[in-house]
Length: 323
Ligand SMILES: Nc1ncnc2c1ncn2[C@@H]1O[C@H](COP(=O)(O)OP(=O)(O)O)[C@@H](O)[C@H]1O
Ligand SMILES: [Mg+2]
Image (cartoon, rainbow, N blue to C red):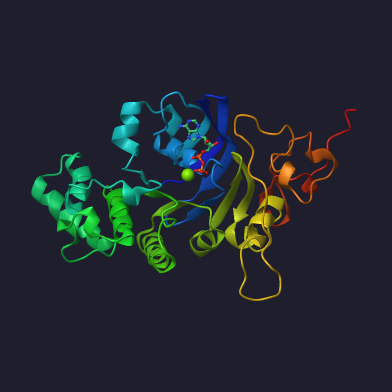
């Protein structure tokens, strides 16, 4: 059981408008044995790119730099063949964004779960037995294995996708917006399943979401991503109750509250284009707290009191005036 350490990770796509830096200098750690790191951010902030990088499933042409260690294994140093046979699905598995719509419509779900085991050389009968056990583990008992995806609800299909990811007993599970296509009550059931897997099975999770409440429910630590950069990183209790970064603050104050008289505030504007980010702080064009240095100078991610880190000039000495 090893822990994940990501250092200064950068991922660049080629696009028609020039290179797009989708992940820019991300560093974080995730302990083993049932810890969850929430990766929070708006659409386009680089969350899926980060996940696909960890799975080594980026499209051809994407360039990666930085280091990724799982325990003492340097994952970036492994060849593709060893990654495929030793890491992907075995040690790190993922439930892809939109997985509930990606099941094979003409295969019974039991067969789909068994398929990953058959690829590992497990026999047919044993594969079917283990597939049924996996489906049971995710709360799909009696007869689910014999059903086709269209016979199952969205929540049940998400459970199938989770069972497939668990097939080879990974120590780290990446979940890319696993509940965003589900209605609230079904969402809660999937969250309960994840909590059970985390606590009961000791599986560590990288939980990707744009929903702070969900992250707060499951995660021990959170990383808030904006335009490819980590804006704030720390204990979930800390970051989600007393956020230091103006972007995290804006995200939190956009959530409707049941109590108190503060109305939710809308965060207007949209994140910058990844192929042409602003020269200074990337959040500056939308930031209510922006001041002199923000427009032209990019702040670093620095430790603030309470042990978390934030990327904001409020917490670090502004640059010397160059002009
Ligand atoms: N295959 C790709 N080719 C070029 N650009 C991409 C590709 N996939 C994602 N991007 C760009 O990378 C950025 C991050 O995307 P993504 O990781 O999907 O964000 P998120 O999951 O947070 O919505 C976006 O600007 C997106 O347009
Ligand atoms: Mg995504």
